[in-house]
Length: 110
Image (cartoon, rainbow, N blue to C red; front, side, top):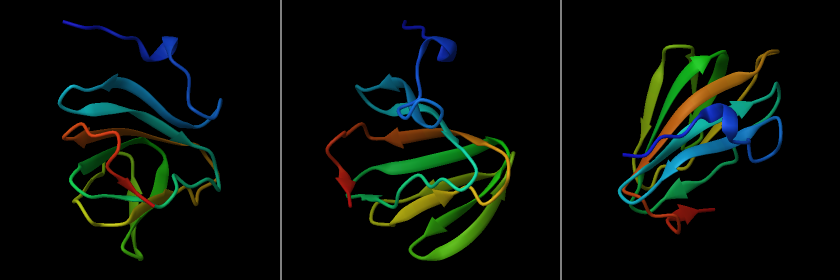
C-alpha cells in the first residue's frame, strides 16, 4: 500500500501543469491545473491510453484538430495515436484528474 497527499506535491510549473500522484509500475495518474489561456501542450502516445476527468471549471479538449467542449463532470478517453491538447478558454482555472495506462514514460509523441 502506498499513500500520498496532493497537498504535499507541487505542480510542474508552480501554479499550473501536471502534478503526478503515482507513477508506475502499471499506470500513472495525477491532477492538472490550467490557468486561463493555458494549454496542456499537444502530444500523443504510441501505446498509452490517456483519460481526463474535469473536476473544476470548463475547457476545450482538442483531439486530432477537432474541438470538444468540456466542463466539470465530463470525462474523455484518448486512444493511442490521437494527438490531443487541452485549452482553458475560460476566465477561471481548470482542474482535471488524468490517468495513463500502461505506464510508459517514454511513449510520448510530439
